[in-house]
Structures are given as C-alpha cells and as structure tokens.
Length: 201
Image (cartoon, rainbow, N blue to C red; front, side, top):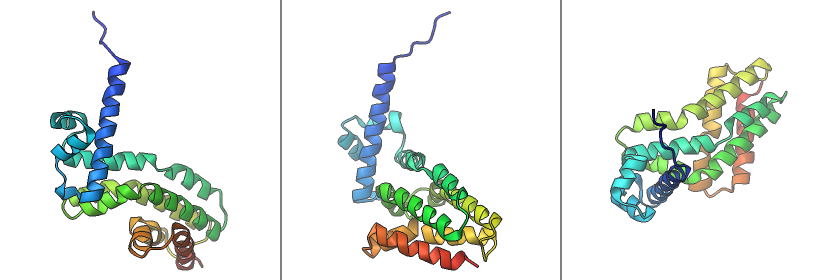
C-alpha cells in the first residue's frame, strides 16, 4: 500500500491563496456592491487566474458565504455569553452584551456592509440572511433565557430575544454608527439604556 502524499507547504499555499481571494472579494464587494463585482475582477485583485478563484473558493455566491462564515467564526459570542451568565443584574448583563456586540459589529463592519449590499440582489437572499444571523440570534436567545432564569425580565424570553435583536442586531449598530454618524461609544451606551428600559421590571 502507498501512503497518501501530504505536503504542508502545498496546503499552506492553498490556504494563503484562498485567504487572498476572500480578502479581495470582501474589498470589492464592500466598495462596489456584490452585484457589480465579477469573478474576473476578484481574480485580478487577488493576482490569480479566474479558474483558481473557482477551484479555491468557489462561485461568487459561495465566496460570499465563505466570507460570512469566517466572519462568524471570528466573533467571540461564546465568551460574551459566558460572561453574561456570571452577572446577576439586568444592567450588568446588558452592559456586557452591549460591549460584546459592539466589538463584533465594529471589527466586522466591512462584512456587515457587504451583507446589506448583497441581500437584495443575491441569488437566495433569504438563505444568506438566515446563514448570517442564525448564530447571532441564538446567542441573544441564550442571553434572554439567562435573564428569565434570574427573574430579571418583564417580558417572556422569546419576546426578550426579539428586543435584544432589535437593540443589538446588525441593523441597530449600522443605523446609529453608519447612517447617523454616532460614535461606537455613544451607540453602545444608548443602546444599552434602551435595552434595560425595554426589558426590565
């Protein structure tokens, strides 16, 4: 029997190529909009052949899904949720959540902009939205359950999870910071106050 050949160098080169393609695609999608970007343009910016884009990262739609997936992987929802579980009061829990979601949205704002530009024109915008928000909404649902278990809510947990999405989802941060020109600090403080007022007894 022959052993399969494995080259760490080749694997690293392939990973670097895919990273360059995803970075180029993110930059182009953000600057020009998803619909107006072609695979040829992604290839040119990444300094690879168009066929390499397809073989390394897939179609344009698949590239966008990869960008979203890697963005989700970079967020630290688990540690934020765990820190919230250590709190005993509503204001403290919401402050931790406001900080955590702020940092995630701030660090990934380019990807968020890509998403908002892509939703209306993507081949399956509903599936893209579900893929983009599933883990985020689930983390907020877990926070709502923690607050319910602590007896801190004036609402049922499902309604509270909706309020948390309204206050700390993509749209809230984007509306205040991008559309209205607020600083991230001001947005964090204001959104936290609104959430406490909406959720508390």
